[in-house]
Amino acid sequence: MSRQLVVSELRKRYGDLPVIGGLDLEVAPSEIVAVVGPSGCGKSTLLRLAAGLDTHYRGEIRVGDELVCGPLPAVGLVFQEPRLFPWLSVADNVAFGLGERRGPQVRALVSDALAAVELTAFAGAFPKELSGGMAQRVALARALVTEPQVLLLDEPFNALDAFTRMRLQDHLLAAWTRYRPTLLLVTHDLDEAVYLADRVILLGERPARVVDVIPVAPARPRDRRDPTLAALRVALLEALHLERDSRLVTA
Amino acid sequence: MFAAHQLPPPPVVLDAAVGVWRRGLLQQDIIATVLRVAAGFTIGSLLAMVLATFIGLSRRTEEVFEPTLQALRTVPTLAWAPLLLLWMGIDEAPKVTLVAIGAFFPVFVNLVAGIKNVDRKLVDVARVFDLRAVEIARRVILPASLPNLLTGLRLGATQAWLFVVVAEFFGASQGLGFRLTDSLQSTRVDLMLVALVCLAVLGKLTDSVIRAIERRSLRWRDTIGERQPA
Image (tube, rainbow over all chains, first blue to last red; front, side):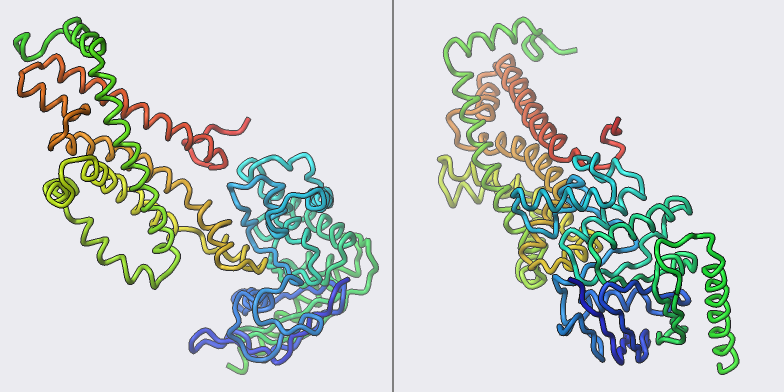
């Protein structure tokens, strides 16, 4: 059961610096939306606000019919880095959000989530024994195990090499198929955006607002070599440049 | 370099040790000292852990207690000895208290530093799961500062052994520290050496125990001090 994420007229400033300037955004239940935009444009801030980590903003963020004014059990967040608890085993890291009871029910949920990211064999390992890609898969499992209705991802595969990144994108899709959360993914990687998302939302320079929305038509599973995706990537690139050039002209 | 009465050879020291052991004096001294260290170290480090947790986690507690504790810390800890004697008399209380003071500060300072250094990024993970502040403290901040706590405990234990000797210099009738001063008066260097060896062995033993606990409970650490996973 996933829920809709609605952001309306969102404004956020750090001191005198406006970071988000009137942003409207809607993600339908179980939809995958990618957000791209120039770095420093407030993408990560958008996710922190949606996750309830920072409640000083104006405008509205709703998950289903719940207003976000603090962390909600219905909302999960995967960070840029895995941020695993080094003193907990992989299984205990995954179970973190489920509380401290370790009944058969919890164990079943954890082994399910580990299976979804193909890490069953590493349940007893410590984070220091994992590669970067594996650690990020554990982070993904930890976010999914509580079955959030909305999952936010903040450039989750940024630090990984191209091959690992592609594998993790497929892990993410597989996990999404299994749990069907509403996904909002912030990324720098245009290929990733068009491969994963139903729609790609383009943000302008800071203060962030939506400058373009590009629907991605091909049905899943998609082929990375699909020329439609390549064409969309070009369109995105052009839109990004247009946006920057228009800023330069008006500035 | 030294005359035999100043530095007796090992066989003489061994004889002396066997002698005091047969008369039951050595056991009595060891037990007295170990009990004082155990009591003082337990009280001092527990108090330090409680206070450090509160001060590390709450700005307000920090504002109330930190200046006082900083001021107290600047007193060379051994300078407490005469005052404690005056306040508490010459029985066990001042000795245990002195040991507790010795153990307190290393544990306190290290744990506060550990808590303050916990990565905010890990705390954010817990916040996303909507954990209450108490749960974040217990499940994230305290485990993350465990390495510092164990360092503090090791230093605290070393201090405890140091302080118990000094405590027993004043008004004790048994204990290894008492044996040192007593032997000085009777110029029994062999007995002094027996006491010194006992202190060294006991101190090392304590350190090894804490180190073993450290190794066991910090297996998860990824540092050059830890063995690489196979």
